[in-house]
Length: 290
Image 1 (tube, one colour):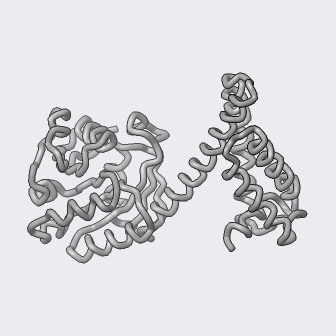
Image 2: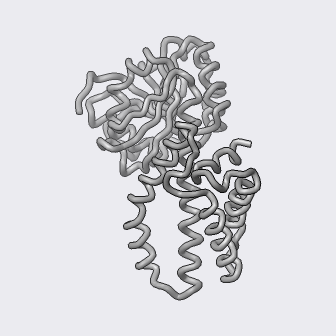
Image 3: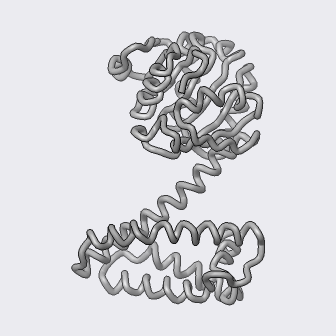
């Protein structure tokens, strides 16, 4: 996909930063890079390297921030000698952090005359630049519209979440919360399989086969929450309360750390005690929100 060429600075050359710089370069843009150490820049051909952060920002209309965390961003901005270099520039931050981090950075950049979009990348570097590459964005609508074609070079499945600058961070934390919760469950399952001498390959295949069905179930449960009608439709909460108690006990009896599953069981027990056992499983959200 070709777009009108722009001058773009990429700040941060970790694996993702390098990939972003290469995608932008290959799309015909004039790419400038800046990194705290110059050695990473030498690995990328066909880009400009600036040792001075002021010059790197001044060189381009748009700067993409992709560093480890907001502490690194703050350190980089403290290196700027002439803060007026931010005036008239657009910054797209793809470094993830807290909601407050996003709000603080937007305030700082706008205070000094710049425009700001906050974002989060939902894939690994090797998955960048594809039709199904998901990138979350939030910030002023006109700024997003101005930069949308540029961002689509990095991935075409753009989810613009509105003007509230912290929206991308909130959605990123929500999706990662789901991911790491699922991953922790996967690892506990693998431990139980190993402890009981079952075939890990069978576990892998069964997980792969049942995941699409559970994805549809999860979508249904989210629709239930959205509707506010917790009448039992697919899965009574009481069944999961009993199931999670059994899982926690099985992990404990097998000598596996059962803290994760015990906490899940405790949440379901609270839901039962609150009188939600005859509602759809999605009613658990009422406990989480308390």
